[in-house]
Amino acid sequence: MSETLEGAVAHISTCSDCVDTLRRLQQLILMMKSDTSTDAPRDLVQSAINIFSPESQSSLRHIIATLTFDSRVAGAAHGIRSLRSTSRQLLYSAQETDLDLRITVQNDECVVAGQVIRDGCAGGRVEISGDAASAAATLNELCEFTLPAIPLGNYSLRVRMPDVQIEIPELELKD
Image (cartoon, rainbow, N blue to C red; front, side, top):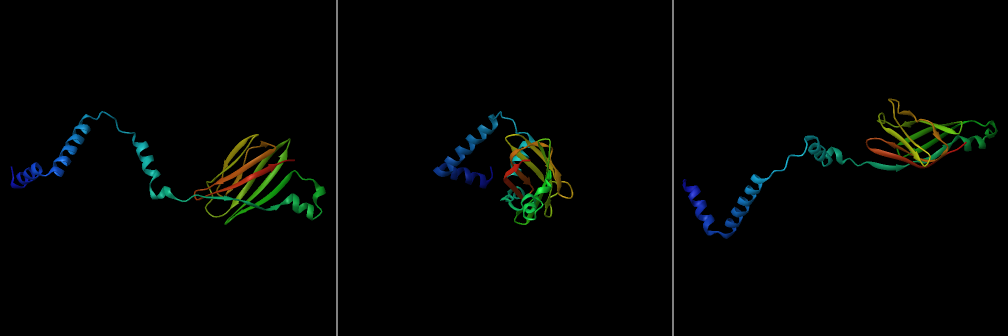
């Protein structure tokens, strides 16, 4: 035995703190040797690590959009209301983002199409949901979308992008 090891053994035999630490380490080693659990799947471990990575800690902003233009109201103000149209244009603003919606009614169903006006929105997702139905679409390279036809009714619409979620909580789709 080397002098360093002999000195450590002598110290441990006289120091109660070191004796307790050595005993706990020996118990831990025995527990580790008797452990029969299996490792978690690699993908699960990576997913758990990603939850706490700085990249995933981005602050997703949630913004409620404000209606800034409605073609039915604007048409009435200009005396065009009597030209009954099955299409309606709505423009919403949400900080640095504008949302242009075009609503077309045919046979008691609505098709909602539109465009998100901001940089970096391609690939985002548009979702509409209500009591009558729900639908979703992905923004194309021009940040445009067309949702499948849905029944008339009250809905909420959400646009999800990497850094922001824009919501129109009350969207009434009617004839």
